[in-house]
Amino acid sequence: MSPVVQAASIAAWNDEQHVVDNRALYREKFSRVTPLLASVMEVALPDAGFYLWAGIPDIFDGSPYSTDVEFSRQLLAQYNVVVLPGSYLAREAQGHNPGAGRIRMALVAETAECVEAAERTVQFIQSKVH
Image 1 (tube, rainbow, N blue to C red):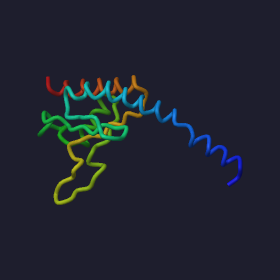
Image 2: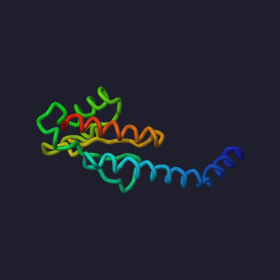
Image 3: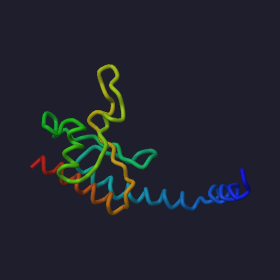
């Protein structure tokens, strides 16, 4: 490895401030988004990661939104919020997909965008209740 690449590697590996800053940013996102979503769906802070793993509310049982796939499609179509259906992240085993009925919400956008997406998700769910 050339001395220039070695020096760049040393500089990159010695920079921990961006890690500290990024962790603080994600703590803020989680602290602002999770309570909003928890008012209408099952969601909790993850032990690690930059996404939330949320359960689709029981109010959708038997409705067109009862699958994680259809819930995700309609949330995008009606409220312009992109989430990943949980069933896409697992495979069926013994007749059950452990991701079914859940969605993954990545908090990678700016904090304000994450909050707005959470607010839109809450509005989507509430619009189906009333």
